[in-house]
Amino acid sequence: MGFLAKYIKKYWKSFSLAVLFLTFEAISDLLMPTIMAKIIDVGVAGRDLNYVLKMGGLMLLITLFGAIAASTRSILASIVSQSFGSELRSDLYKKIQTLSFKNIDRFERASLITRLTNDVTQVQVFANGLMRIFVKSPLLAIGGLIMATRLNLHLSVVLVVVVPIVALFIILNLRLGFPKFSKVQKALDRVNGVMREYLSGVRVVKAFNRFDVEVDKFDQTNEEFKKQSISAIRLMAVFSPAIMLTVNLGIVAVLWIGGYGVSNGNVQVGHIIAFINYMTQILFSLMMISMVFNMFVRAKTSAVRISEVFSQEDDLTWENGLIPPPIEKGRIEFNNVSFSYEGTSGEPVLKNINLSISPGETVGIIGSTGSGKSTLVGLIPRFL
Image 1 (tube, rainbow, N blue to C red):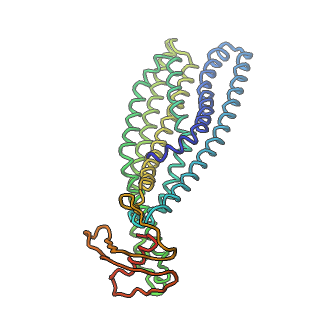
Image 2 (image 1 turned 180 degrees about the horizontal axis):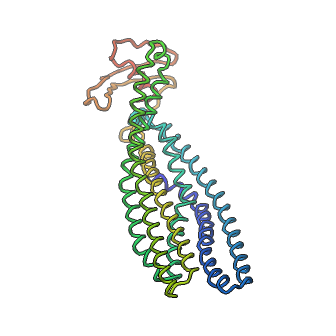
Image 3 (image 1 turned 90 degrees about the horizontal axis):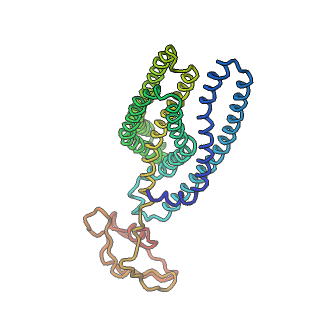
């Protein structure tokens, strides 16, 4: 997937700026539970209204700062992802324009359309997610772990159990999901292929009243696409509830341990509330990371398919760099030309053809079916 290097080099500054504002946004979110704990344990417990108002005002300022950072990040992310997607789509289209018929025939026409539209969109959505969710979620998860540990070391024992289990779910999600979504994209190619075939021959279908045949053909490919999509989504649907259940069990454990600590006077009520907020943030972050990995699986599949097109080299090159000498403009010369199609065991379709057509001369090419008339004509403009 080396084709991405060009876009990374071009957009890394704007991307980094968006991530910077995203970091400010995450820091603002992480400060809230700690301030709330101080309000409860100091202001409310001590009945100090001035302290409550002072810390409440601080929370409002931090919220405003986070909102400005979030808005700026959102604007930058949209500009970068849309510009990247538009340029990638344009470059892929230009690459297809440069390919020979032989190169293009290695892909189904419908597959090229899917790569140019759906696959580029998947990569673009993932790039946008990097600046919105993927970076913020780890920051919130790591920051929440640090803040929760600093807040109360005894309660953080719960995190030692919860986090590795959730990490295991995410790894399994990634390893099992990639093959599934690869099959989904191939099934989508087949659906587009059937539609393209019908639309290109719609006059023939109408003329011979073959609607039922075309409907059956489309229903079969559409049903296969549905099965592959359900299979992939069913696998993905298992992990999100599993992660949520694991973290919610962790919150229950925090309430149980915290309640026992409060009764013994070892834990403050504000610490429990703040710790639960951090646990909720961690839950949200891990859920988002799981969703981003789902996006990554789809984007990786699409990026591989796009890379296959970019990796194609034009087969129409002169052997050993030998370019034939120039001839009179408009003149066509064939000197002992032989040609065989790829995959035909080298059996020549044309053999030792000699032909000379002067400018302005009209020549008719006559022969039986399969004698090589179309091949001969296709060689003149170097289609083959």
